[in-house]
Length: 222
Image (cartoon, rainbow, N blue to C red; front, side, top):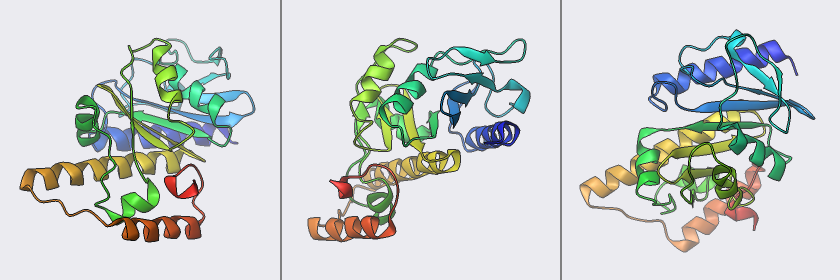
């Protein structure tokens, strides 16, 4: 995998996250597995909206720094990414962000699982909430591990959201889908009316998921 092009894509996705209010200040982080034991990741203390390829760090699966320009080092939250890669060999990219609506549900410790949106049922299935964990500690990867085998997107209690996939664009698009789903749940709650799909309709949508051959983990695959 071309490291320069991957670093440029990480910066592009980071800017998109910043512009779409998925992160504030220096929040959030992204990573891409580019080899058996090489991972490119975003640095700590840098806004995702202002990164350049020179900011991106290279680490191994243990989190050890392999290469970084002076003044840059990986985020302490990279432990969460490494745990996903460890538990899910199929995953090649991880995105962590604080999108407004999804994070609202994470603060309330409410999962995104009501079947109200066809696209969300097909693409995500459900988005559970990983238990609260103190930032920058091993509690964070341990909490993520509880759901990582079941789904490709989760909320982090009182923290934000985490998505992952076969490539960075896929992982990021899942983050967009999570935020859109959360917004629809929030807005239907605001108007006081929410019509849920029936179990039979959900089963039909799960069959669509299976037919599309979407990679990753989903309730339809059980």
